[in-house]
Structure formats: structure tokens, C-alpha cells
Length: 426
Image 1 (cartoon, rainbow, N blue to C red):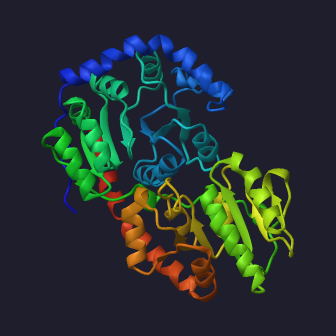
Image 2: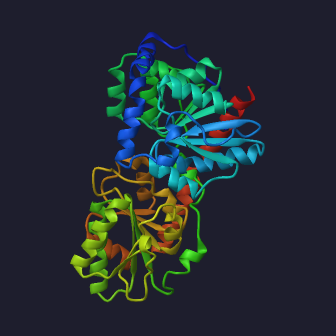
Image 3: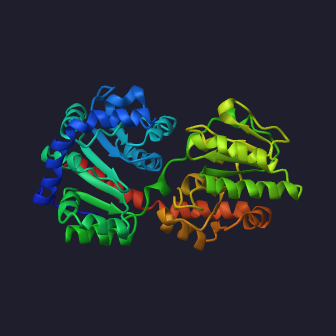
């Protein structure tokens, strides 16, 4: 494998300086902003201080790598990279930051060894200074679509090496960034190493930077470790019934899944549908839909468990998706029937599920295309298609093909790991 050479970091240019200057003007709004978000349930009241850069844990002794992902999918994808780095360097400690409140709950249930989770501080002068003064990372790693200007610029000024991995930028996003002149090009130029998920992203990044060397190494999501299990919970599910799951489900996905389940039961099937909402506030609506359709349902949040006659188990809980995927033979991946444009299929693949999905997969277009072309996943457009697929397709062979594709898709992880370890040694 060809070794990637660390980039020569660019200086902070004038357009990026203008963006950073705006932070001083916005800083007085930090408190009111967080209070509004707290009132709307968007922040954890016990951890609000972290958004202001105030830590709740001590910095571990030894080298510390800081990794950032915006939400649940992004931070969960970082676990494979953490495992790879940890295997190579058992002395390493890891700090993972995210922005979305739900990400903290889910990641806590799947926390890798020697890893601390902290919410990303607001990208303002004081929170950033507090955060970096306390944690003093030896290496900073940005992932997917997020690189925050002040945090990245301050790391560069402090001599902290930075990498941007599993980068993903759409054409529309690149055009929007280009409206800020050289600001984003300067920002990405602060990175020592950049790895993109696909060639399109690599070309867009090189265009914004007006040069540079971006490596294409695929998605970290394919290489992520399997989600956590809880055998005691799985034991509460009825034995001997075939199980399929729809997750993480939005209302559009739930409608397809419930219509499918009604059709399966109408044809004499005994399958159990596990319906796992993407947003817990949708669970009431899912339960009402079950009642309207005459489907018996129970809910995890109420400690209700399915029996031999239950049609739908609404798994309205955080951090337990690994349990439901392990119990299922097939998964309908959510977000693929509405403007969400798809969720991560690899979590289900890693746990032996055959993959079904709707037509809207732009967020994971490369991943779904890879799986579909290999006969490792199947697109469905309506309940009739899904009923046929669940009844007639050989889901075990489909799951085996998906597992093989996952192994191939994860090959870029080693190159990323090698590059990061070289940066750490500099």
C-alpha cells in the first residue's frame, strides 16, 4: 500500500480570519442560545457546561487523540478507527466529541476502551480556549462533514496536528462553501492529512483548496465495530419467531413497515416486526398507527415485551439497536423513503442482517450502490415489494454477500490508521 505523505499545512488566510473575527461578536449570544436549546430539549442539562468548554472529566495521562463527529452515525463510525489505533498503540487515550444530544446517549452504550465522550464546545473564543487548555490533544481528527473554523485554526496555532478523515462533501455543499471565497479552502488547508470517502468529495476538496493531495479511502462506517449487545434483553423476545426490523425509522419508513407487517400477517405469517424510531418522540404516533391498523403492539420504553401474538415491538430506546439487529434476519434501513436520504446500512450488515431499503439513499449513495450491485441489498419501493422480498428472497445468502462487501469496503481503514500514527509520531 502506498504511504500517504502528510500535507504541508497552509497559513490562516484573510478570508478565514474574517470568519474567526465574527466569533468575538457572537460570543455574548452563547448563553442565550444554549438556554433556548435547553428549553426545547435540545441540550442535556447535566452536561450543558461542556458546550461552554468546561470539562466534567480529568484529562487522562499519556497521549490523547481527539476525534469529532457531529451526530450518532458519525461518532459510532469512529469506533472502528479507535479500535484500529488502539490495537497499534495500547498507550493511547481517546476523546470523542459530538454535537447532537442523542449521540451522547447512544455512544455511552457503545463506549470503546480508554475513551471519553464530551460535547463539542461552541466554536467561540472562550469555549474553544477552555476546551483545548484542558484536554491538550496530541492529535485532532475531524470526520464526515464537520470541521469547525476556530477549533481548527486554534489547533493549528498551537501546533496540534490535524487530520480530516471520511470526508464527505456534496456538490451543492461545495458550491455553498465556495461563496465564502478562500475561507473554506484555507480551513481545509490547515489539515496535515485528508482522506475522502469518494472521488467526488476528493475533487471538490481539491477544488476548494486550489490544489492539495486528498486520498480516497472509503467510509469509516463500513469498518465500525458491531453495536453493543445485551443478551438478557434478547432473551425476552419470543423464541422461534422470525424477526425483521425497521430502523432507524422515520414516519415514512414506519408506514411502509407497518403496511408490510399487516400484509405478512394477512397471509398467515408469524413474523415479528421490531420498529425502532429514529426520534423517540415519534413512538406515540407509531403506536397510534398500529392501533388504527389493528396490529397488536408493545413498547420497550414501558418495559412491555412481545409474546407469540404480538405483531409489532416498538423499540423506543437509545443504545439498544445492536440487540434488535442481532435478533433479526433482515432489516429495512430507515430514512430511505423521505428527505432524510438514508441511514447507515453497515451497522445491520455487521450483525448478520439482510438489507432492504427504499429509493432515497443520497447520504450513502456509494455504500448502497456497492451493496445493491453485489446482490447484498435490495431496493424496495412499496409494501408489496417488501412482502415479496421477505417471503421469497434467500436472506441468509444476501446477508453473507453483504458481510463480504463490508470486509472489502473497510480496507481503507489501515491506510488512515497508518497516516494518523505517523502524524502522532512527528
